Amino acid sequence: MTATADIAACRALLKNGSRTFHAASKVLPRKVADPAIALYAFCRLADDAVDLGTDRGGAVARLRSRLNDVYRGQPIPHPADRAFAAVVAQFTIPRELPEALLEGLDWDARSRRYQTLNDLTAYAARVAGSVGAMMTLIMGAREPEVVARACDLGVAMQLTNIARDVGEDARAGRLYLPLQWLREAGIDPDEFLARPSLTPEIAAIVQRLLDAAELLYARGGLGIARLPRSCRPGIHAARALYAEIGREVERAGLDSIAQRAVVSTKRKLTVLARRLVVAPPRVAQSDLAALPEVRFLIDAVAATPRRERAKARSRPVEDRVVWVLDLFTRLERRDQLQRGRL
Image (cartoon, rainbow, N blue to C red; front, top):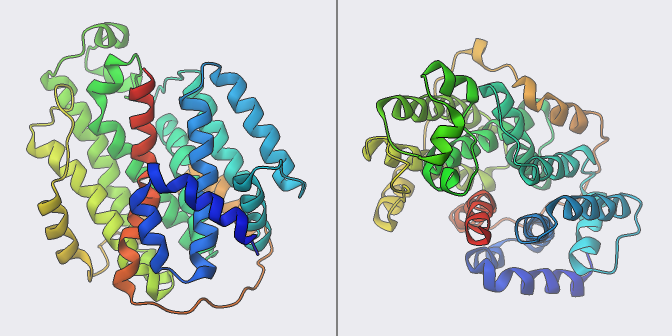
């Protein structure tokens, strides 16, 4: 188990920058809350090291060295590293999962662009699907079908973020839209970056990205019933609220150039009230094969022996909604850090 002092330090790390998570984590059973805090702290430090530093490539290299120490069981003397090393051992988290996250951060550091939707999905699998997979292991589910659906949700959320932030990314010199889609629409990627503006062609590309995310939200929803009962409402809520960001983009005429879609508190409460108990989405069985881009994550989990652990005490399922939502807001927070740095 993670040392009490290290978890306390991780809580302090998150207290100011992640107040919602810090408060919500207190309603969780200790055996669930502590590992989640350790994972969240390590991911946050990784994001900060790359997004806020001046030597982004060097930061990735140092993170990889730290991860190597974690998996050797000799983490550096930092509370987040020690706590994460304990979580890795307790939940037998395959090294490929956090390594995938660092690879995605490396792609960001290199300002990598993506030719096709499949290429973009490979990026989303690393920066978001990997975190979804790790959280699934902490929640006690390892079945390939469940991990595949968790990866679907992570990828869908990242695609939603990209569709929402087209203008802000472009003004910061970043381009995530598939280059193939841009060229098919007669748009030169470099000219768009120099003068980002909303056109019918850009609006159509944003819609294509939201449509791709919507299918993955539906697929991801099918895995929720396989999670522990106490976790289901929170995952349903996370899925619904992130999908609602896409609906806001649509309501704004697909203009994610001049403005950034925000779901109001009132709207969030409405969505939550409607989605705490939902029927499974309808998806054809033929559409449920795991995304090729996340297969390496699923295979890594399948190849890792499961370690039994004590069952956490149950709490009312409603208490867990905010916690799960905030775990996934790391995606949005990383975008905010990038904008602040640039």
